[in-house]
Image (tube, rainbow, N blue to C red; front, side):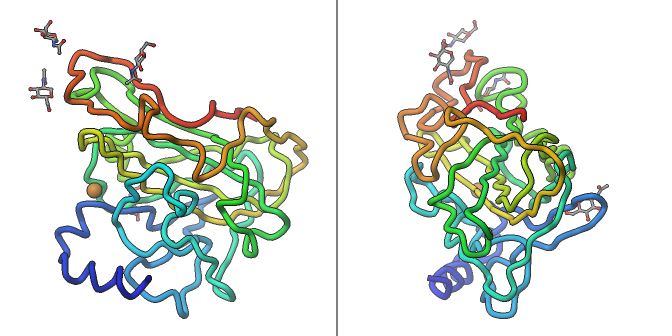
Length: 244
Ligand SMILES: *[C@@H]1O[C@H](CO)[C@@H](O)[C@H](O)[C@H]1NC(C)=O
Ligand SMILES: *[C@@H]1O[C@H](CO)[C@@H](O)[C@H](O)[C@H]1NC(C)=O
Ligand SMILES: *[C@@H]1O[C@H](CO)[C@@H](O)[C@H](O)[C@H]1NC(C)=O
Ligand SMILES: CC(=O)N[C@H]1CO[C@H](CO)[C@@H](O)[C@@H]1O
Ligand SMILES: [Cu+2]
């Protein structure tokens, strides 16, 4: 799978690659964590991020790789986790992000023991942050992704301070909807070891599976923004944000 993706990228050339993207690094409490290097073999790589192989989007809301992108694998001995206190801010940095229409969503999931041996699609995910249509209309308004671009292609979220300690994934997802009725999903995951004295866990209504959380019939997923030029509301898909 990796080699065919790399060859496809070479065939498409740099301009196609640059038309999409993903999370390249993180900054947490003043420390920078480099992400996985897409388009490169996982052999020898070391990161807190899980493997993701190309800048291309997933285009099906029920894609089996929706949790942590293709292929979301652990890096084995190179797989790291960042130890961070609940309440900390996590900043994710993308490449020069080309899409300004669509929401930004950030999720977490508690691992069954160690994240390195957990399968992302089996976990229960909760949303900690989101930004959809901030102002204006669907095709012309200011979106979370426009804010991300304006903020140096980055997004900062706070880990709920009451969250119970343990091993978690954090999942940053951009849902680009600039193409009519063809959503593009860009999720990347990193592993965190949360410390602190909190004891809060989200209840069932906040928890979803990936795939499972989204459907093409969700108003914010299978959407043509250009056919609704006067609409100024947007329904962000997935569960409500859990505040802790
Ligand atoms: C902008 O983002 C890059 C990482 O993509 C980072 O190295 C740089 O420090 C950031 N600049 C500012 C002003 O935050
Ligand atoms: C949007 O609003 C403009 C100005 O009021 C109007 O001319 C146009 O017909 C509307 N378009 C749609 C699709 O409702
Ligand atoms: C806007 O709000 C209406 C009324 O609640 C809803 O039916 C519609 O799906 C919303 N539009 C979007 C794009 O979420
Ligand atoms: C008022 C305004 O800026 N309208 C633009 C909204 O977006 C559509 C589609 O991109 C443009 O065609 C309009 O000119
Ligand atoms: Cu793109």
